[in-house]
Image 1 (cartoon, rainbow, N blue to C red):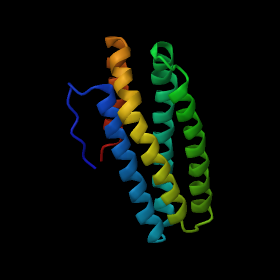
Image 2: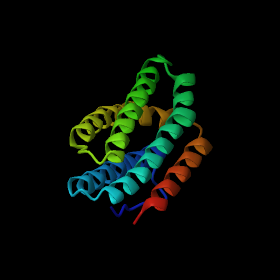
Image 3: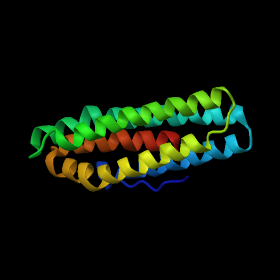
Length: 156
């Protein structure tokens, strides 16, 4: 996937682009596994896992605290999203185990895709816009630069 990144994109927009990148990466892993190209599927999954873990870290360490400090319901949405991160990690572990055993991953990745779709929708419609409103300009710019580097580092 070749993403067009411009200097005027917000942190939220860049995080949404990263969601798209992660979706594409997962699709590529599924294609490799379906073709029984296990070594490539495992290699690609390692990159996917690294990227999704970094994405989750950025949310939990940078976005959630700002939301919680400023929102009317400071812990409502982020408590749910943290729980979803735990569930996503459990499904990631199941995909990783299936790949290690060279077993089909289609059911597990379908579960992961469903989890990510629901989770990303909430982030993109609630959390990211709130972050853009509540965070200081320097914080928004620093997060945007971090996500932009993450996107550029994986652009092939």
